Length: 452
Image (cartoon, rainbow, N blue to C red; front, side, top):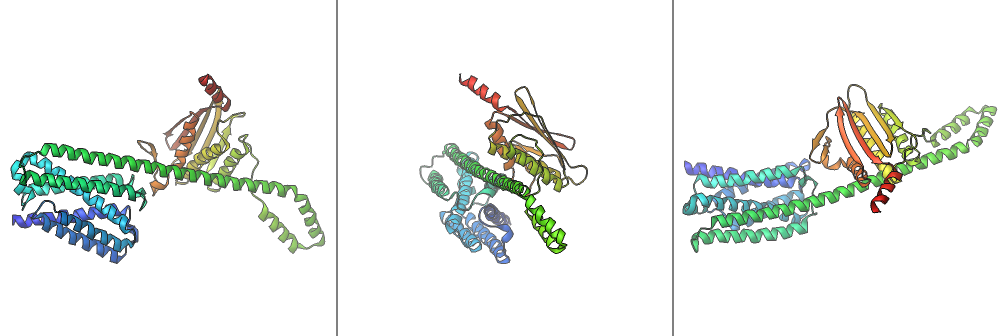
């Protein structure tokens, strides 16, 4: 009975191990939402099949090189049947997962020797039938599950399929060498010199795994930041392109207004002849060519003023009340491009927040004023729910966090570039973003004095 229970537990642990691998692959290679019935059968059968094979093997020996290779091969082939491409990449990721699981198994095994000493050989390593073996396997897989869960939303979901192929291949080679060395060490301890060096091997293996983990975290963080910067630059270029098209439309309007005297002559002629059909057709053509704009001057810079005009019109269309108050004669330190990006992102975020408000007023208040050499800007908007904060600041509540939040990062980058201060807080149902920076002339004077 005890043997049957032991085998059943090993079977469950084996299936959980394979299931965890699929959870990791769902965020990297396999698109879960696109799974067909056939694919789900492949996943289910492979989990049961490999779980049974791992259970059978672990009833006889703690670790087997042959079964390790067998597990990597079967899992890779099953995933390849689902994805039908990227065979090399699939093998890379499956090998990385299986190597990490095996190494953590060895880490817990060396730790258990501290308590079991010579009894480790028959309680865990060869023909085991004890609770100790179950505890080691469970601890490893719980630890691996925690790591996958922790980094799944932060990094794994943002990994491109073949992005880390080369570096992962090198890491896998290193892991296999380490795995082979520690398997040799544990075998030699019980069948070679019989000298137990469990503490030495535990510390060295823990150090090795820590170094690998730190290296991968730093590398993935670097790649993530690199990708974020690329997205920010793309977003900024698209924003500038949008305002460029807007400016062309306004210039077109001005030309049309200049030429309207010729249109008036034609309209008078149609009216005089009583030709209402051609008169209406001419008016429709005139209306198509006009671009709706208002000559409200909030800022002296025409391009930045255009941003405010466009966002004000957008807010009105979405039934959001926007009030803008700008003190006269303010000199901003930004370049034209940077001002468009900063003001555009701030107003976009405010309008998006107001759109979520289901009941109550939807208002945006923009106030820009100066005191001595400092410029103060505050953007206050209605909110539907209190914002969430993390270690790095605001956390987006959108359905795909990895694709959002770059607008605020662009704003922060520009503010930091000019030595400004960005802060935010809430008052009741209002979110307030505040920016402070030196005027253009004052900043140059401070820099010159500093260099002097």
